Length: 137
Image (tube, rainbow, N blue to C red; front, side):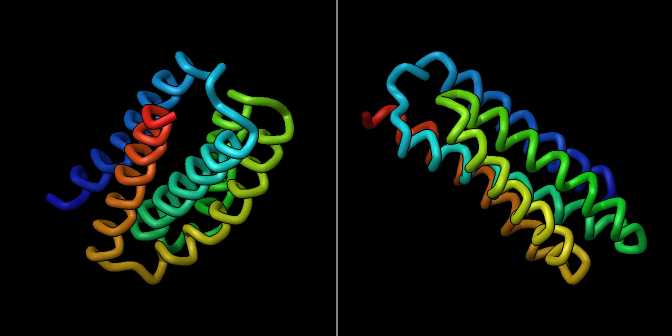
């Protein structure tokens, strides 16, 4: 019963990230360098930690593979959100993705159910804060 719920959470992370990306893409001319760096770092950090927690919790015996997969996910998210502004913010998103992609699986291997709830709240609150911050510009 718990396994399908975890995968629904995992897929919901990508749905929220995709929705936030298209929301931000419509107004990318309003995004400054500083706000773009905050977007790239927040998106890659939240996704890297949360995906690492879920994958590390689900597959603790495949630690190396989980780190590689989480690194790829976090780096791609950082690059995609950073490319909204320019190459400098893309590099910032990639470097933040590297850090969170390594950190997330470490938390996931030692995680329990409350950590999954915290990481889910991290993703939803981070992306809603990013989208709300754009509205206040």
